[in-house]
Image 1 (tube, rainbow, N blue to C red):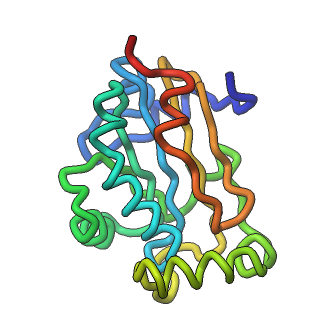
Image 2 (cartoon, rainbow, N blue to C red):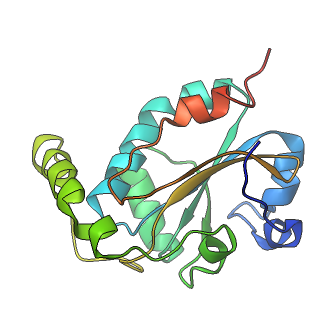
Length: 179
């Protein structure tokens, strides 16, 4: 069980592009709520690539993936299309209201630009060719991943550094895999 407790009222306000709230969706099946960094971020792009590769496995475990992004929906859909994630469920949160409600903070210099980020960033940009661009959204916002079932957070991965890379399948497997 996660130490993160989120007001269910907030989850009921989080309406997806499909018109369903996170609270309602989590009552139907486990939800993996992925709070992304801005789309110019190399690690955001890497996360989209990772999810695209693991999506079928996560969904086969009975979990619905919902992204929360910092941009307008048109920009988000361009990136989801680029990473072959369409159709996809998402929530736009350019004001970072939901990020804050889930305890996701603004990163400090070390978290965003420290040696660890530079080392992983080189591999992500140059070797894996995810590229980077100026911030498309709040460049200081930190990401996180929450697995929610029946409105309760079952698992969470809150990034300590922008370069952290969660094990998405393990988060689901730890709490919500089908028998």
